[in-house]
Length: 156
View 1 (tube, rainbow, N blue to C red):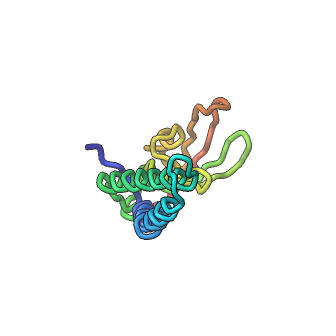
View 2: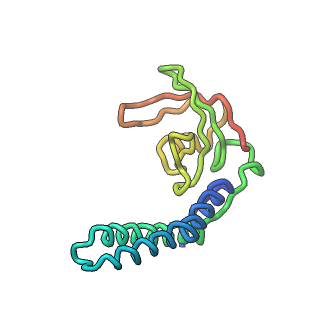
View 3: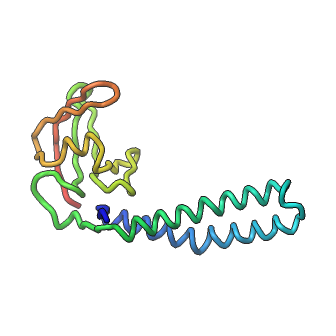
């Protein structure tokens, strides 16, 4: 079984979501299904079908999170140093636009590009791995090739 790298923060986020799904969302949808059943004919009961669909989504997400956590390998970035690797927080500058961005390289389940959490398997992360502060990289993106210079590497 393949191990999934996660940061401690990613593990806490998934644990929190799992607890909320099990303690709040699941009981609420069970109550909604029970109430919808009381309205009679289930074949034309939109509330019942919507509640069942939501229940299906919740149960699927619970199974998905449990699977991720069972395969998780939690890595503490504060104990790492050196060249860029999983957990590194990297500041880069686009050599064409001079736009600076900061990313933390994280596991797939916790990635969120809008919040600077870069998927380990993304083209940019793969190009950054093994590089050091001051290096330049080129990444193929949907809009064409982009060049970045690595300004800073931290493990926090």
